[in-house]
Image 1 (cartoon, one colour):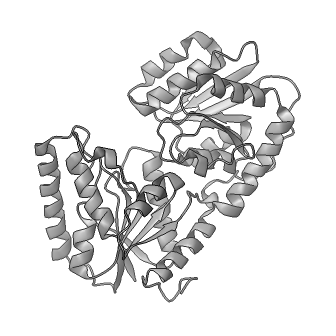
Image 2 (tube, rainbow, N blue to C red; image 1 turned 180 degrees about the horizontal axis):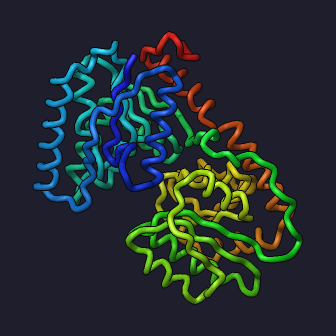
Image 3 (cartoon, rainbow, N blue to C red; image 1 turned 45 degrees about the horizontal axis):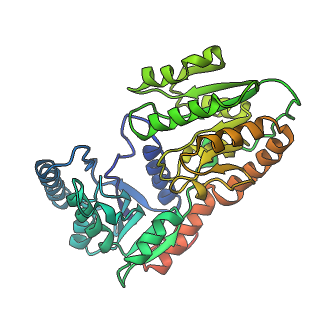
Length: 378
């Protein structure tokens, strides 16, 4: 049994690493675990960075061409199609293929991570908003990762639509050092901080700026920050931290799981404000390695960090509170150790691929989406 998969913001085989690509790949793995043959139906990106009538017209024409190509191919040759499954739909990257494709094939349409943003109904992204709303309205099932998204989805839910919580998850099998015992923290010494993020303008650079400002408020505490990542704004990021000298290091982008896992496992504290993060898969990866996290409570971040249990959350944009949270955990090795244990347990028990697969199987069953005979939920 086949699922046709779409990821209009960034396809899972895109060459540039990102959290978006990581989560798309996780959904491919999850659906395969349930016994489906998963086919990437199209690699079309509908992301419009500079909206205009011409830009929306162009991407819609591309989508119509992709639909013609898909429907002209023998898509059902290898067996029945269970659904069209799209990862991430919102006003900047509406799904222009999935609803029409599902209707043409007579199968359910499913979205994992859909965001409604009524404030975009006017302004430069009004057309993207209209297109994304139309796709969201068409879905029989929506799997939503955050309480923040769910509230808006429920307020505008069509009668035929089911909305099911599916909190962000990862595959612990991809991280060989996840869950390994951590060494007892030294009572004194340099606290090893780490962050992992792309270096680009916008929200990422704003997060780096907030982090730099917070570190400047830590007084005479001993710490070292490793900044893992790269991108077009690297020079600007390095300039933000230049005053700290050799207290901050930049090893570049590290995409190999064992190497990145070693850096996470060797650190004491993960620090990243997360300006306007949808939820931030990197927080799950850090906690899987027993690493407490300090972040701001933007968007869905409270759905991936348990405040005062696996890390600390601070009010968005409050630099003093962010600095206080980081400083308090630098000063409290025993508290970090307790959070480290809780973080590893949280990921293993609630956010691993196995638990997510079970949740999706139950959601598919409730929504009347056929499961393969080999699926645990069949």
